[in-house]
Length: 373
Image (cartoon, helix red, strand yellow):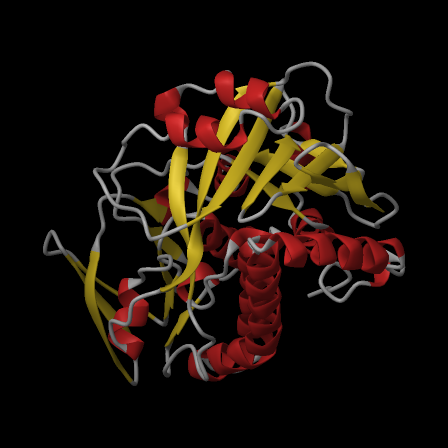
């Protein structure tokens, strides 16, 4: 198999196939495999897979186990809290680059190729031929497009539609631990049209994210966003201002909250999609990487248990489409509610959310977290 895209999803797919004894080559358009970004969360549905792959211990070693989620107002009043302990696999926060390295290290280095930017592909009854920008060509039994929300593979399969902008941006940064955060506690603070999340992720580091309603990003890449974040959040509860102040201005990332509607089918014959290429979602349930890791495990399982490549990929899609669409819809819905601006709606939202979360049944049975491949 040829896997296009060396991010979390593509690397997870390469590891899953390698562990299943299925030959695969992972190609990435960048010269080197270096996952960028900030912090992230992994929930038990994903860490179970990492345990099956034999890498969970090394992932735990570079992250921070999560025991509790706290939802707060901008003044620091507690709306509700959820116990995240007691799962059969841990919830974690960690840096994306650390997870990427843990996924990549077990893969034989000769199965990973940089400087390969896909231009197009063509399939026949014997396999799939891929053509790259430098003139190289490769042929494989099948092709997996794991090349992100702007996937070249998806574009050739389904056309060049643009992602849907959901009305708000997300800033992300990493700051030193201010020293007064409870170990294992993560939080999200809700205001009116703004949110701020705090994710301790081990090694004295804290990932934070912040949102703002408004138009899509404009201006040059790499512009300084720190003043914008400070202007909105500096008067919110501790330690928000300290985290912003301690973050280098050039290390604050901004992305628009985007996703795509679910596809009725992901692939065609010997070609399919995985991760954000198949089902990009807004980051409101922390399941983007988790869904890609689940996809990777499901792909390897389908290829191992079905007779032909096309049949295997069809079975993989059939098993993954509904679940990823449901999670994507939930992420979009939670994001929309979290970004409400009307003060009366915000008050009502907080009261209803407290009532619902305080009566939430055992999270170990929740359909998102309890899922097993």
